[in-house]
Length: 300
Image (cartoon, rainbow, N blue to C red; front, top):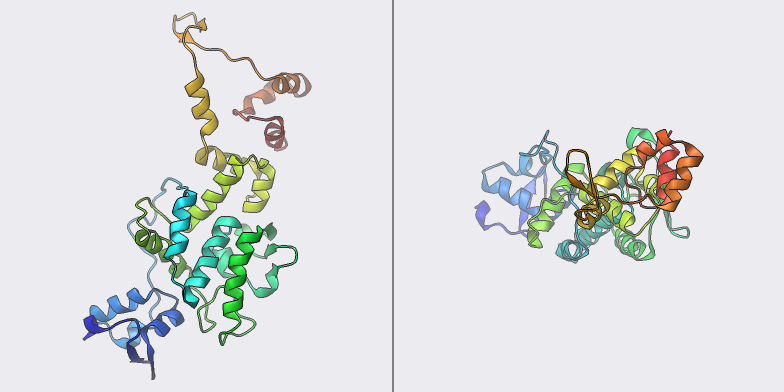
């Protein structure tokens, strides 16, 4: 009976017999997916052939962005097993987190798109079919290299994508979308966790580290700086929070009698006001440095 099956159990389907783990690797889905299908009385042929669904209760909804903490990311990576599948998935997650790749960009990578010497990745068809080159830190490259070394020992065609199944098949985006929630659950993380949250996390970390906005834009592949600015402002409202916490009572009083606080403009903003004009000061938007403000001004 299906309920007695284990990942290592042999399963005959589509004219051949192999373990359920091997079938899952070919389909690009968790082993639990196939076991669940068999338990629900699916035929073996259908259970190992039908792509996993991409529906779900969140489909069509616009949900708030999530940012993962370093501790949470460590737990997610640790939840990947030590086999070939786990090594691949760990590298895939790191590509989302440390390179800021979208799912479609990550699973489309070919070996020729990787430059180990320069530690760069070439995305040929990003959003809007735009290409870009992104950098990758040494530790992240080491995680990727571990998968490349494991991949080289498998019977995978040289023209296959970097992140493929263990037999060289296409890794479905549906599999990747299901991967993060599953690993987060195993890691005991209760917040909504998804692959795109890795991209949010990278943007948040770069902004917190003081990386200029235009560099974050280039890494993420945003079409213009305004998108990046809105992205960062939403993910990292620390400036707004700090400003609200620093407000004092009784510094000035409006005609209505409401107590307000007035904070002088920084020197660099006063200087730019005279250089650029009062109208452009409307886009100041609480930028905390001259470089960040100038980056926004370049849009106009």
